[in-house]
Amino acid sequence: MAEASRVHGVAESELHRWQREFLENTHAPFASGCSEQEARIRELEGLAGQPALELEVLNKASALTGFPAGFERR
Image 1 (tube, rainbow, N blue to C red):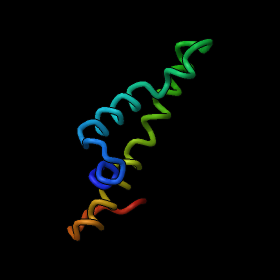
Image 2 (cartoon, rainbow, N blue to C red):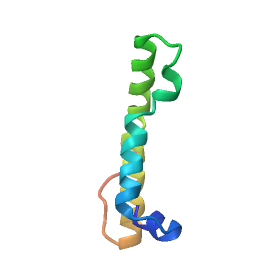
Image 3 (cartoon, rainbow, N blue to C red):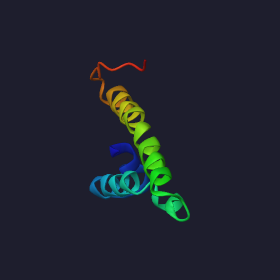
């Protein structure tokens, strides 16, 4: 996040807020016309990718700082 903040000139806190809002509302564009169950499935599918995204961010931060992250993709 720090690198993206510097590159795009956006406060890191703002990026975190956008990420949180995006992750909380990933199902919103697809919810209209869908059943409640379909909307829930889409929401859960969106959340399933979150750990992979977090792992990628941690590994990139680790590479930038030189500190070992201790995480590997399975």
